[in-house]
Length: 174
Length: 167
Ligand SMILES: [Zn+2]
Image (cartoon, rainbow over the protein chains, first blue to last red):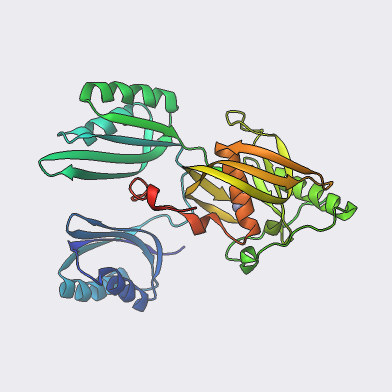
């Protein structure tokens, strides 16, 4: 049984965060698993799985030194599970329209009720600052089928004056 | 008949460029039969290329007939295939027998015109679109020593970068 830790990290974006954190984990004989690292606004965020023979307290200490230096906040959790547990999405949903309060909450609530299990979601606010546009992408598994999901979301689209595309994901394996 | 072993990345041999078939022999026929048996032993798989089983010759099999929602030409043996025309682009998700447990989004031409020999050396021309065209492009990549991993489109940028990509 391997010991996996989940590292959650956030802070003001600056050059070298990824390299310095990766190096610190490497120094702890850590192997990285699945990771998500991205800039959100002016912040840099990391969520990553790391497997290391060191104790959580040792990892904590080492990262604390690096993060203090870079003024980053982080959190470590012992997690169950590991690699090779990918779930394949069968549907992709994109939504865009004039930015309005509650759009993610509504869209995800409707999707959830229509059987969608979200595997990933990304959203952006783009366009002119005075007239922002919201863009949302989700991928997931449509537990009740894609038609049911599409029907619910098209009603949502009409009611909220946004555009919703529901596209089946038919993975080509060869 | 025999089931052949699939090379799995990071096996370096998957990066090898395959050579054209020169002789349409009985031995080639026999190999294609084995390749077909291997291919059909993977449910859901719609294509296979000879280098995936360690034979570095330009032979691919494609069969989209199990997915009738996609227009297709049925079971195809394509020897020395050559794409002579590309048009349009489409983003779709791909996986690979040689890259287990991973799928990703890849940009491909939407429509292709393909020239290829059959197993007896006769030449044919096909016009393909969508899913079947994607399968053929994926398999021909194997002949060039390329994997779909070489063509992944980043999720977050998939929308904005699509017009910047060249095929
Ligand atoms: Zn492949």
